[in-house]
Image (cartoon, rainbow, N blue to C red; front, side, top):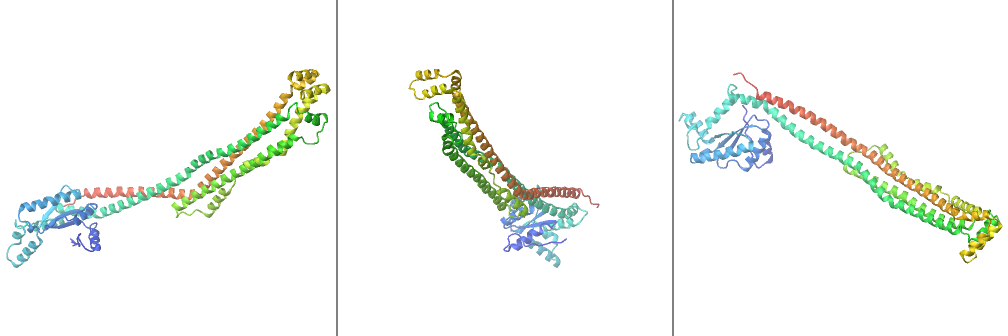
Length: 483
């Protein structure tokens, strides 16, 4: 038997406290010595809580029991210690010996001198009811493998390394579980960053509506002005126009309506559309760049130890720099000159079909309608027309409507093209950001996932070790020693 007298609990130097604590895991039996003048001090209570985690066999010794004046005081102290110690150690039975070390020493010295028998002094009933010999007997029986205490000693001796292993295992499991929880939180954070692109896409979709409305409004306004110009041009009252472009057959010079359409309607709308679409493309790219850098900084700030490869960083930067300008391309391919020329051709065709079929008399009657003051006089003039001329005049409103419809179809087609191009620009821009974030986030996601997988595997291995230790513990408890 090796008895280690540790410094105790209520000490001045912290290293002495640590020395006492370090002996607990290695001990097979703990003799917890208290003083009768102040049993279970605050430091002793704290030390009992520390002992409890190791689940060691504890024998309590109440020293200086000769300080108590009678049995009632002693029993009261014993009851107090057993109740509190049992609660802290979660033990149903608490073994406690009341002793007086000084009286026991005096008895032993007296026995050596032959003054009186040691047994009589060690177990006298007062002062203090010194049961030192009972404590000695217990310790001797603890060494004898033929006794129940001796068998318990063997079991405790075998359990000591198992309990140490269990404590180490428990600490490892706690640490690994905390690390796994952190890794899982990291993985969730990475995935949340990646999935937040959907919210960004929806916001961009919503914000892009105002840009589309501006473009569509611009085209609608240009369309309305072109229609108004066509309707004001295609009137029977435009004698000078008819005379110049129908009777004289002048097809080489440009009609005034064409230059008005080009200078007053198409060119201003075209320039404004180019400006808006350029700003739209810049808006898309700047938002992408700002959002992409925000994601990149989020990854780097939270996980500075993860360093993506240079290749992946270059690829990601290239993705973010790409500018999407389908809308700018569509408006750039629109020819203002061709649109003006087509408009003029439509005007010429209506005029030629109408006034070319009137003949001389029919045209004269038509010209009269532009100067006669009343509707009845107009009808009288038209009555002079030939049958063919009357038919041509009656088709004039439908011809004018065809020009109006052609203007609407052309404007609507351009509006659809631009809207589709702007939508593609938006989709490609948000897709680029998604590809960028996926690329820069992949290393972080992979590291987090690998950590989760590795720590999960470690937990499984620790669980297997825990099962083996439990098996050893069961075998120790069921150990039978031949006497």
